[in-house]
Image 1 (cartoon, helix red, strand yellow):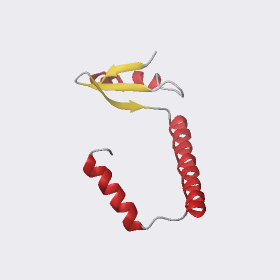
Image 2 (spheres, helix red, strand yellow):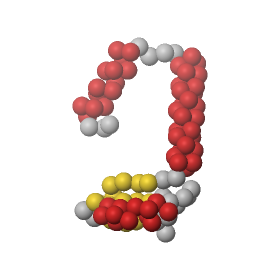
Image 3 (cartoon, helix red, strand yellow):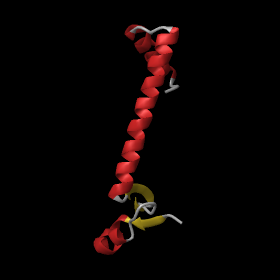
Image 4 (cartoon, rainbow, N blue to C red):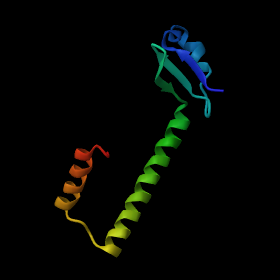
Length: 90
């Protein structure tokens, strides 16, 4: 079950931070809506490393596809993105 507390509960931050561990983040709400998450630094580093690995895997795949099917010019890519933005699709 998620550990969710009001932001005002940080008055007792020592107790709250003691509840945080790997796999057990602390979710803080402000005005009844989720606002912040406190996670263990080991979990943060693991998430950060996983995101970098995913980014580089995606880049490697994109480069392989570009080399196989051909590169797209910067102008063509920008025009495509602008079209998505103007259509509200992005």
